[in-house]
Image (cartoon, helix red, strand yellow):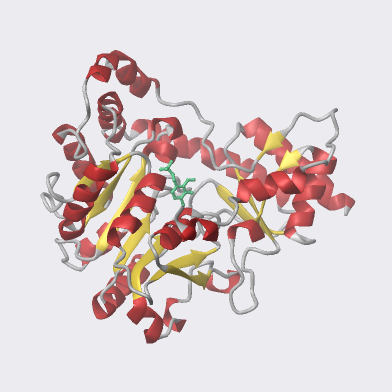
Length: 398
Ligand SMILES: Cc1ncc(COP(=O)(O)O)c(C=O)c1O
């Protein structure tokens, strides 16, 4: 087998299962999980209807490139959402449907990395675990940039030496960030594009939480938008990843897209035809309906807004928590070690949260996720409020 497989770390949820093994939570309390970032709001009925109405499509192989109508719907969505020059997003060349961004992030990395001894993939730290695994299996080394409170959880890109940028083939940006919820400003994105030009690397912006933001007047900026503001209509060196999982509460549909630089997406399409990961036609048709509608996304955001408000009201007196810039995560410091905190919370309150140290690696003697927990506010408002009350009782008991 590929020896690089040995470099893959156990997934954070495996570590969490080990932490919880043998612990007996109180049976008087129902278990609540704020652990996994799996949306729990209902899927939009008009999308599931399209899916059900098109099951006859199961008789046909889907193409890797996807239906022109889907690529058109995605291109139009990008132009509307990120204020792109009309017609700058060519559905034939700038967009590909993918089966969720996880698959696409992994696959794109395999296709993009040129196997050189010194190849680097630069990743935020803490980070979404696929960035690291994708780098290892593509034969590259991950290079982590710590996301610390003093920098608003955005990596200090200015502190990265030229020698590192020179070896960088691919930079992962996660904005809004998992687990911190921090959003990169458009100026930071423009700065990254300039660095990519100077040192010849690809910027991969994972924007799968871009539609979950608290302020309707302040949407997170995207990498394509930064390109548009720079007049960079070919999106050179820039790739974005988007998904219906969080935007439309459709994690089971496995539907997203990758968009940007046509000179990168062309070879990636070739890679995908061999890889064999086309989206089923009925899922493509349902995805068109989802991308063409914003009313359900507005309603989704409103539900998260109420949830954050209610949870923060309960937690603020005992924890240093604040509304995240975007996403459905709360990233909060713990009064004791994060894994000990998570274990005790499970033991005393039958509540699961994710220790931040499981999402980050040690760099320069610092584990930037240590001393934090990630709370995914995915359950109903009442369940999230009940969870917050249990966390508060637990902290008060320490
Ligand atoms: C930062 C980040 N990127 C990508 C994904 C993958 O999402 P999906 O494959 O459902 O689009 C997730 C899922 O939780 C995530 O947190």
